[in-house]
Image (cartoon, rainbow over all chains, first blue to last red):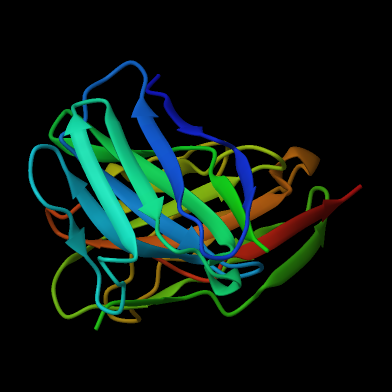
Length: 117
Length: 109
């Protein structure tokens, strides 16, 4: 089956620094990937759609200058949290779709837990 | 606006008992509805989708457009069903998912 990986699985950083999270589709190509954010005991909230070779599409209320997304290849999307603050501490999850039989199935990464001190 | 509501944060039933996880949605068009499951220390994975009309691991879910619901049901719960369950919605043809708050299902022996 399709596998999506994320790196790192967890990261701790100081306030004001930037953190990069990678999302890779290991055995398939993905022109589109999605980034979600999950606060403790809350649901997943879509942050942005990562588009290979073009700009990401951000959901309402998500600061694009704060959360930089780069989708430079068909198997890699990166999310960079710039000038991180404690309120950015969260669980970040990516997903990538596989189209088969005319239907899309989203495959999720294991998530990256970010803690900003 | 698209919205998915799962009214129960926690649900606990005994092994062998029927289980129903509730999901209601709000969407102006024709949505695609999904149930995702997350077992302990595992990633989120698709359990079933309404267009497939199939039973996965004994679970079924019927889309009721009149009641805007997509409840997940299983007649006889098993201990391995203990997990976090998320109902999700996507607009037709779209890939972006809107998730409900999730229901933590615990099956007691």
